[in-house]
Structure formats: structure tokens, C-alpha cells
Image 1 (spheres, rainbow, N blue to C red):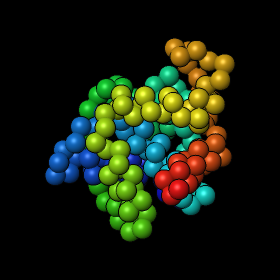
Image 2: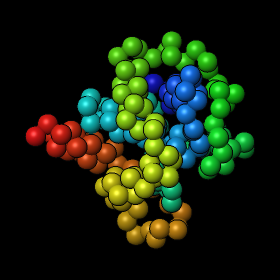
Image 3: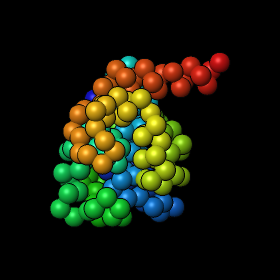
Image 4: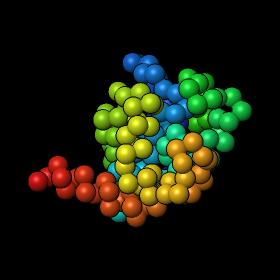
Length: 160
């Protein structure tokens, strides 16, 4: 299992490489969420340490939120200067880099607002937000079993 900060740095470097794809704090959180969710679905285990909470704007990992809390707001642009470990890819196996890249190939093209909207319609976030209005803060962790089942169901739907 990887350190979430190394995966975070990998995502930033990928987004800010040749193409310089827009990446804000909101989008970064959702990309990390999808990396974790799809790994749970394909491999039955978390990709990195760290849970996600059901915040108003979708799944948020508290450690990554805290990392950027003092310098970045929800829609602040994340840049290469925000990377802690520029050699993070050396810490991630080739097969696991492929997993990250496959997720990013699918989701990186979308805005943070689009990704937020999708997470708001998915069972893991909805289940964790039960009893909370759309504007009330919530720190309930998303259940990784629900994440795994939901994303596995999407794989099975694609196969059939």
C-alpha cells in the first residue's frame, strides 16, 4: 500500500507534464478518490493509506486537505511547485503506475465540478451522507466495502 502523498504527487506531475491540464484542489481530491475506488474494485484492497470523508463537495481525504489547507482553496490551481517528492514515480511499481494512469486517462479530462457531480450520484458518498443535508458539513468516512461493491458492479456492467 502506498503513501497517499506520493500518489498525490504522481497525479500532480502527470497533470502538469507536457499538456499542463488544469488541476485544482477539488479535482485532485476526486482523482485520488477514483484511484482508490477502482483499485478496490479490481484488486480488493486499497491502493494507498487514507480514507475519504463525505464532505459537501464530494469525497475528501483529510490528509491531502490538510496538506494544502494553508495555501490552496477549493478552486486553487495546483502546480508542480506543490509537489513534495518529484521522484515519487520511483516509489510506485510499474503495474501500479499503470493503474493510476488508466484512471487518469479516464477522469483527468473532466473538471473538478463534473467529478464532484458524479460522486454526488454514487452510492459510497450518498450512503455516508445519509441524514445530512446538502449544505451541512459531514466527516463520515466512505465505506470501502460499498466503494468496492459499487465500482465492481460498474466493471460487471461493462463486461455484460
